[in-house]
Image (cartoon, rainbow, N blue to C red; front, side, top):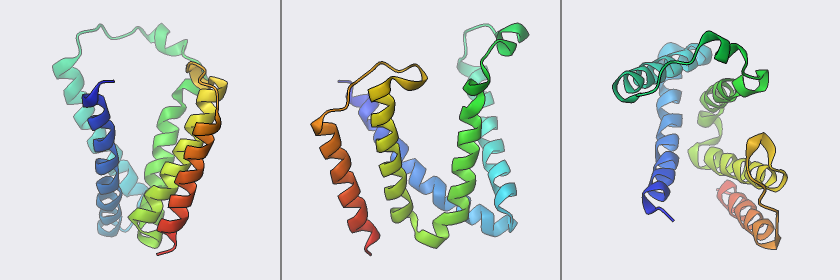
Length: 148
């Protein structure tokens, strides 16, 4: 197992937590959760465009390639917008620990189901007692965190 990738996954969690707080403060500054979401995505888009210009070595796909992409494959942006907007709306209400605990529980349940059924192009990794036990532990941990 590549430990660098494990470290990156951990750092995603750390930055995700800070993103929630930063975007929440942006909401306070703009007084508008939708505008805050737009600004968050706009700055992210700028960073990605710079990365693309600096590091991409592949040709830009043709317009026909983009047209041939199935509609559901565009939902990643919709899911990202849902995530950022809802986090901005609720993090101040429930706190970052409770928010992320519930997000992680949802991600784990969805991940195990996606693995089990091989949805959205993933290889099948059948559900087993250890995975179910792991989900149970996460849920118990979540309940403990939510107890405050």
